[in-house]
Length: 362
Image 1 (tube, rainbow, N blue to C red):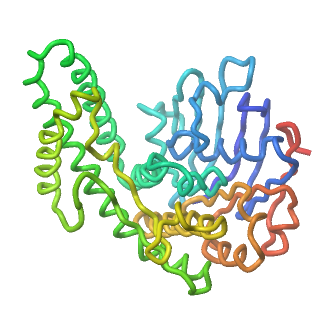
Image 2 (cartoon, rainbow, N blue to C red):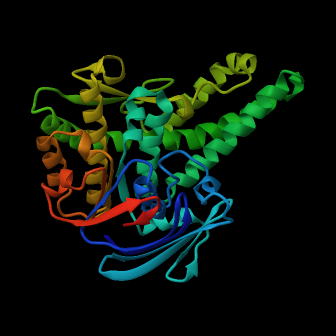
Image 3 (cartoon, helix red, strand yellow):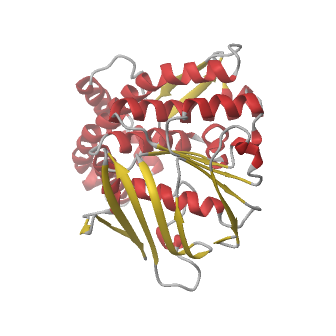
């Protein structure tokens, strides 16, 4: 998989930009000049939302009505093109044909993004760790995104009902309907997350072993309303239904659903101790890098294609040996690297450079 060129119009601080890419692309310049904006524009073609956690309308350059992004890319020896139009929401075309949704571009383009914002996966609460798993699964399984939507719709409806029950007890019996819907879609989410972690862990262990020079071991454990380990999809559904039913009184009291995959967590352990509670800055960074490199390796294995590697301001914070270790894992992929000083990465591997200043190319 390779992006050959990109054209950007009215995106963030970029008014107009047109670039042709190579296998290794180094985007450098001072902070807040648009380097990450370029990486973000590329990442949107995977069908995912911005990795910076903003709404689509916030991506449009201030004072403009829309943003337009166009790429030409090669996938499975086939030349293709794609376009994203961003207004209040995104719309997409592929080879001139309008797609039902921008998320469907993810069937054609895969990418793994490494960014300092992903340190929140360790430092913050469970939401970021769930998001990591869900985003990865959305790239691997086209239907997973639909299951998430089904679950979130059912969750919103159940929470509305819980609020109404506090005013009208006659609505109590309706909870069964939403419990069943939550159990069906929720079990699918839990089952797929467990399968993904099971497949991801050997890759993460291998990378973390390399980053720590064999001194430490990473482990991943899902935490939920009950022990998911070894359960079938049907068993998870039955146990989740029972847990929702058993927790109804508490949910009505709090007017909120407190059981389900929306409350689950993936605990990240170093030598069986919490990386969040006990890990140093270096250990936490190594955990994120290990998970991201593992994600990329698993994505390559399951899709039989190399995903794009987007490295946003990561390499400059690592010593030479760790930079070299990471680049050795992605040496056959198309790479986009942002940094303040191009020499930081050029000494490891030759590549095409782009000097970005105030949203433009110098």
